[in-house]
Length: 353
Image (tube, rainbow, N blue to C red; front, side):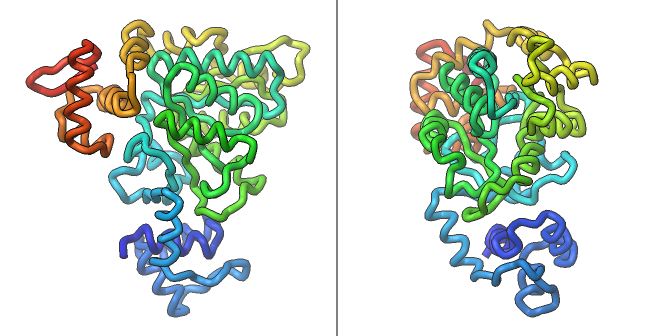
């Protein structure tokens, strides 16, 4: 059995208490297998609240039956951006056919804000997400009501992809009314992500915990309509700690639902009023990026174009197979279609957009 089996087993028993997991890993000389056997043999004690240690192989079967993948921080597929944030997750559960790895931090932008968004706030979030996704960004958010849902929907409107970071296990979508949105994300080549094993509920403190992953996966964070008590402000704080840019859409000075947003601007966040403000900050030319992304006519083309954008240097067929996990014949056939339509070009070094 590999390390993922043992990690998942300990995560289930401890309900993924970060401090406890960190202690066990250190006691196990950095390996989850050693920690598991120490717990099983009584050399390490489980917390009082913990449940019994399940059989690793049986526990892992449930992940596979749910169509999930568990990627540990010791694996190559683990997003490199998350390795270098404060309190990095030890592993993440992933659902989706987008790719073996999540999109590059350089092409991902988080959009967050209040759950109790106004109609104008949701319209702004959806518009920014649509334009930024059309310009090549993957949009990350939390699948919550309000701004999150609008951001995911805007990315999908543009034919782009989006990542939803959940505060509970991926076996039960929360809120339940967003199950259809989650399925749209998956069928459009996007990804659902969670630090928590299946069966774990979205407890209140976990919404704050998961925000560090949302910002950690992203190049920057856009705040839309955040009151003083909004969880989006925690995402902004994590972004600052992680050396990510923080962008804020301002509102009317009398609107209390923008009070947190305005506080961030006073503290030095960048005020933006159009998607082009963000694109200009990153030196991105919308015209050169939007056309290939919007020209994808199949999920396979979307995967390959995203892989080429993330790799950013000429990539050969083998590299694209590894990045997309598509069958070799599918990659070759899709590349041929993209070449014929002039969306990509081929050189001795490989393929580029």
